[in-house]
Image (cartoon, rainbow, N blue to C red; front, side, top):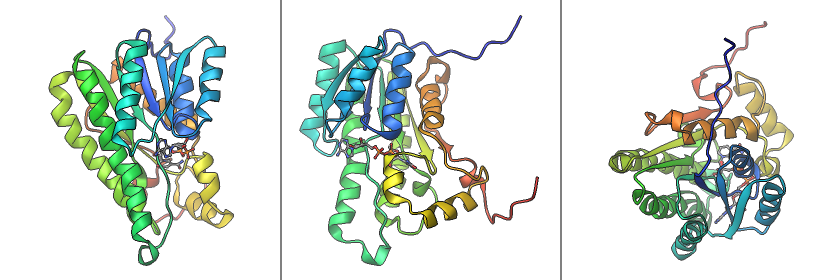
Length: 262
Ligand SMILES: NC(=O)c1ccc[n+]([C@@H]2O[C@H](COP(=O)([O-])OP(=O)(O)OC[C@H]3O[C@@H](n4cnc5c(N)ncnc54)[C@H](O)[C@@H]3O)[C@@H](O)[C@H]2O)c1
């Protein structure tokens, strides 16, 4: 018998994806919809509506919700809207975030607070609200978007790196405390992924520094990141909890890079 690639089936599962108007979140929303999940496309920008339209035109089942992940009432509304429309929340993938690149000595308190509020407090507020919904069903998958910048020190990443390091610690605590409710909590630590966020931030010079430091010698794609998220969201990942999965072309594994010729 021929081996088949594993197929994920998310029929009757409802997934909320924050930051789903763009980049990694949009790709995850689209791939989960193809695998038959009901989708809540949550984002602060109205481009979320286009993602909803694309999913529904392709035969999927999606609604859009405006959310500011750093505002607790807005987050409560996102979860309540998802539950009201689809009756339950099974999967939560937290992709909403902002990237800040600023030398430590030049980072203002406003920039620091903005990164912490959106990237870290947003993860806390969303995780807490969705976990309350998931405990009702004794099943859940939470996947937070951390970053390699939360694992290793990166130049100019004081605020962003501290926020993402916090996301990693928070994900581990959530994993322990939510395990009795059948909820797993894992995080992805992407390296350089070709998205709108990166195209705004990376100059040609930055791109060369990154590709020189990545064993794969290239940026990753949103679909390569989504593949990891779908696996962690699947039934098959039931015994994976509290894990930080790097999607980084080997960046975190590397020390001094002296590439050997093939
Ligand atoms: N692209 C990368 O290389 C990379 C690397 C490591 C980690 N990440 C992380 O992955 C996640 C997704 O990144 P991306 O590259 O797809 O970025 P992106 O900018 O393409 O998408 C981020 C989305 O988050 C939304 N958002 C921002 N602030 C929000 C708020 N307060 N409330 C609700 N939505 C908000 C934006 O509107 C946007 O649609 C982020 O958490 C980012 O830090 C990305």
